[in-house]
Image (cartoon, rainbow, N blue to C red; front, side, top):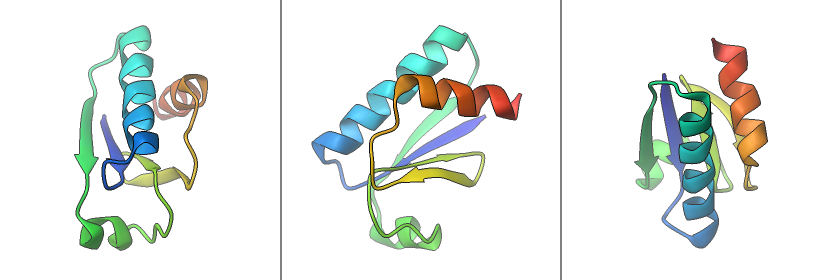
Length: 79
């Protein structure tokens, strides 16, 4: 599983990354968490507001910090 955090490194982006890491750890899954900070790559997803979270190429949320539980639910849907 590939989880991408889209954002320029702001505090909200860091919190999103932290929530994603905690969700992966609690579920005990093997997932690659990647931070995407290049504006070109972010806009390729059609994202205009950050932070954004992408799981396996699908944008799950943009413009707000997803909770750890939200991320866990999205990961479970992908299994």
